Image 1 (spheres, rainbow, N blue to C red):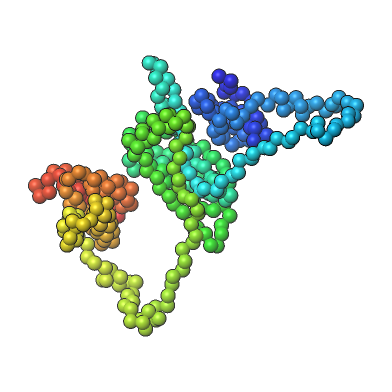
Image 2: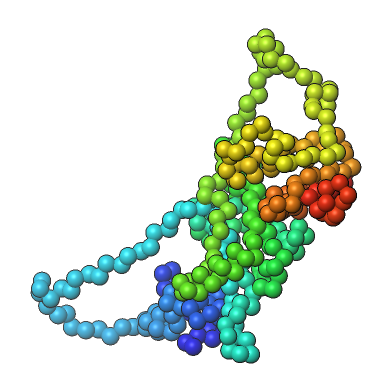
Length: 342
C-alpha cells in the first residue's frame, strides 16, 4: 500500500498539509489537518515533498529571454473545481473492514460522522443509544462544510438497534430561526446489513442518513386575545381548570380497527396502522396527564406489526418505567401493559 499511518500528506484540492492517522480500507484513509480529523480518498491526497522542494527553491536559475510565437502558446487546461452543494446535515457511517482467520472480509466497527453540507455553523448535543440506553454522548460545534468524526461503534452492537438523537442550535442565533431543533434516527439491524452488502457491491465507502435539509424557522406566535375569541362565540377555558375539560383517561384501550371505525374494508394496511397508532398516542398522553399508574394496550397477535410499532415507540417515550407483553387469561399474548413513572 502506498501510505502508512503517520505519513505526512498534502490535500490536493486545498493545498494543506496533514498526516495519516488510520488506514480505513483500500481506498480511504483518516487524515488530520490542523487538528481536524476527516476521511479522504487516496486519490485526493499526495506526499508533500515535491511541494516543499519547489517552495524552498528561493533562487531559481535565470534563463535568457526567449521569443514565443502565438502558435507556440499552449492552451490552458481548465480546472473543474467541485462546487459545494448545500443539501443539509447528515449522519455518515463508514464501515471499517478487516480479514478474519479464513481471509474473508468482515466489518470490524462503524465510524460515525456528522457532515455539515451548509454554509451555517451549528452547536449540537449528540446522544447514541442501544435499546433506549444512552451509550455515548458529546457536545460540540459543527462548522460549515465540515465532516465531524464522533466515535466508533462495534459492529456486533448493531443487533441492539442503535439510535441517534442530535439537538442542533445555531452558532449565530437568528431571530427568525428556531432556538433549537432535535432530530432522531433509528437504524434497524437487517436494513443496515443489507445496505453494507450493497455498499460493497457498488464499491462505495459511506452510508448516509439525512438529519435535516433546512434548519427550521421559528414557530409563529399565534397568540390571539381571549376577549376576541369569546366575542366570536368560542369557548375559552381557564388554564387552572383545564383538567375539567379534558377527556378522562382509560386503563385499557382496544386498538382493533373494528373498534375504532365503522367501516375499514376500503382502507389499506398503512391507513389502518396510522389510525391505530394515532389512537394509541391519544390514550397514552391522557394516561400520563391523569397520572395513571399503568395502561393496557390491546393490539392483538396478527402479524405483530402493530405490536412492534408500539413497542418501538414505548422504548423512546418519556415517563415509561417499563412494559411487558406476557400471557394473560383475558388477552392471551395480544396485549402489552405499560407502567409509568412520575
